[in-house]
Image (cartoon, rainbow, N blue to C red; front, side, top):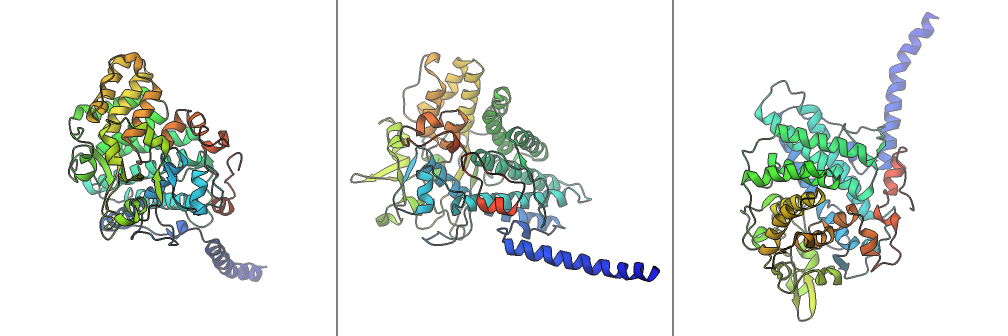
Length: 455
């Protein structure tokens, strides 16, 4: 009996090792889009900063202006383009079947663009989780520690927020994933609770020392993101309070001309942007400009977006341009160099968050003041009667102010207007289309995931 026990004790390590090899091989075979490659740690502040930079880069997209047929490696730029097609902002100038599904509001669970957004999103979340797990356990309490943790918490929260608003119930990933981890789906109430908690912690951790550095998440960026989250979650008191904090800080203001918020690197309107250069290129201008202007003209303005602008609206001539009678999206320049930055959140959004929150709280007169700041900057006559300000007029204003900035689809969907608006152009649009399908690849790899209704 003792010999048998001894033999078993010798066999156990071998069996465990064999099981690990089988598990590792299985995960490799599944090709988890490299989400599970993060079986690693960061042991120094320098390593944490490197991983944090990699995480920002993943959000921006990975090197190079993509040509047709190249691998899909963009997160935030693809999110802007797909939601523009899915809403009433843009149309596809071509017949690429993967992108056509977005314009047709008929996304298949195996759509490669949607799958790219999902897996890159969870890669970003996983990187942030590694940073939080390891840096929080560093013995030395320092400014570096707080700053890194604050940024990681905000990135973690913001990425969950974006994915939730596309797919609905999604996995809540609070720890770095390892092979064999299958996080369960969380509903929106649970997701909102943790997202708000993380952004609150982020505000506590971060300082305002880098207020002029709008490519890094600081305290005011976290406050601005939290104001947006509160608005979406219909917590209007809290949304207004966070927006008011930023307004009263007097650190931000509208640029005198709309275009300066995009063409002037140093301005008072951008709260947070994703920065690009010749090495890490923004592909939006390349995809939207005509061929004779250095682009491939793949995405064009929709008729509803063209009609949304008043003829005297100065935003129209910046966001949409034309050659003869051909209109093209001109908001993102740098079509050849790719060095044009993408704003994530601007001060104008804070003013409109304040306006919408106050309107919902029954204070339409004060809401009108914030709303008119946006109209007057656009060269439009202000509204004079508070009764003229409605959710519909606010949505119209946001459609013009944030054209091609990834806001339109989320706006009409969160306000319950998607079916009413999109069904005018797409008769097949229905309740099921208010959420995208969970990518089939993700469902195949995680038995705890389930498909959204109708797919």
